[in-house]
Image 1 (cartoon, rainbow, N blue to C red):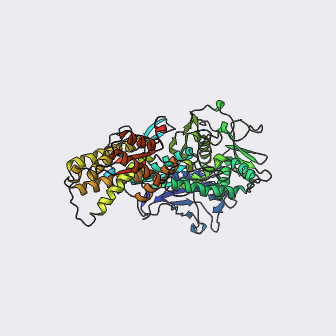
Image 2 (image 1 turned 90 degrees about the vertical axis):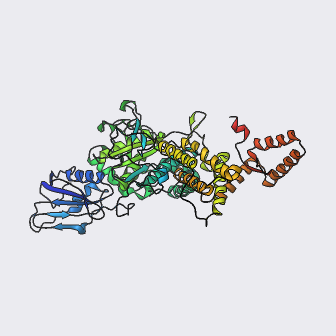
Image 3 (image 1 turned 90 degrees about the horizontal axis):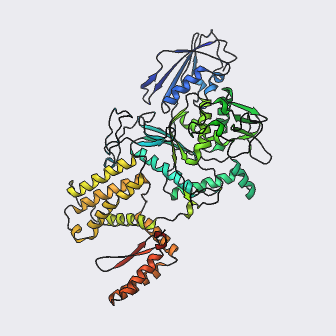
Length: 613
């Protein structure tokens, strides 16, 4: 950009990247002379490039102009070209007769530690050693490697995860459009990325996890009109409902949850950058992205440009240069919320919102961008086009997408009306109840031995079982988060715990308490990574039991009376009656458990009718 106070054509630029202790990480080899042009500044491009390579560090930017004595160029105008990446404090600009120096620090709000953590986990029992200096081609998939393999939609293959900044990860996941309760399809998305978030943290990474709320959208406006509510208020209400659903699903809160309505400045700035770089055009208050200007359009989805159709959320507009051109800014319509912009009052298109918010918090280049498979096209395809148009150095390392939840071979969606809300979810009671009941019983025994000095040694057979599970855990989680294998592998250690707790042989085993302690800790660590660790075993068992009773349309007293009736039948050797009572309860999801001491308890189970499906 040309500043009115600067008539010089040459600018000398140098950059240095510093750690929190002001240790030099990177610097440009020599000051770079660049030419200031009216449409774009190469200086800005160089700054953006360095900031994208080192997104979590302080950046010192130094400009040198051949200034005449007494002249002070309008640096605010000059530096405007790379907003919103850096926030320049004009008080840090220093002038001299020959040079101008601008020093800016760019601390990231979510990385406050004074140094980068090494890739060591606080739970060494579930992490193996990293192979140093290993190339991607030579990376091993054996269980003794911490190489994390993720399926990258862009390359259509699994790749070894290599963060842009060692020890740190930037991850953006597209959030919900908040106009209704979220369904199970949404749950799959956010549980998937919650597990990824947890596993990355488990591996020792500092993760900046950004998940947005879309609170400005056509669907929100339509629903608000239907209900007679203000669109923003409606959306905020459903944002709160969504957060409650995430708590219900045991999903960790992300590092930041930006809302579109709070980021209009960043969105408008990005659109201006795209127009300035000649990738977009305005028509009667609307702004459209010109897909013909972006030759790589379709690379993520594999679609050819001629096969694409106009935006999925609006009808074809004859004013478009290409039917596939999509809206960056929509002019205001009567009765709809709007914001001021250089193109007139209006609101942003769907796709630009995520591009602007991800850039605002992570820069134009970061590690992971994720969402459901339905976002590959057009949403993520359009995000790539927009971000690259705004910043040539924009680059996302891994595009990760989870599969659909289907009903009768169709994708679950609100538009098809074939969805169940998250609040309609029923736990897989029998499976999860067994895990929690076993750990609850184990906890009770260990609590009685808290004051007992435990020995360091563990029996060889227990150590072998622990090592076996550790290897399965690392190998499976590092293979694109293969959680089903991990859950299946829990069966053996859980059975061993039950044997130690309840069998005569197990109760007499040497180092029994030490074995229980090691096994319980191992399983607890795994459940933490999977997001399945409850705050209280007692509370979750009670909750699961109440759900099972509601589903069976029985009270606990009724179940206990059935147990007494069955016990009496068994004492009278009326085995047919006894079996009939067991089957009657099993049919509605109540399983009876007979213990060696002759007592009978009940627990939730999958109803027989569902087992047969």
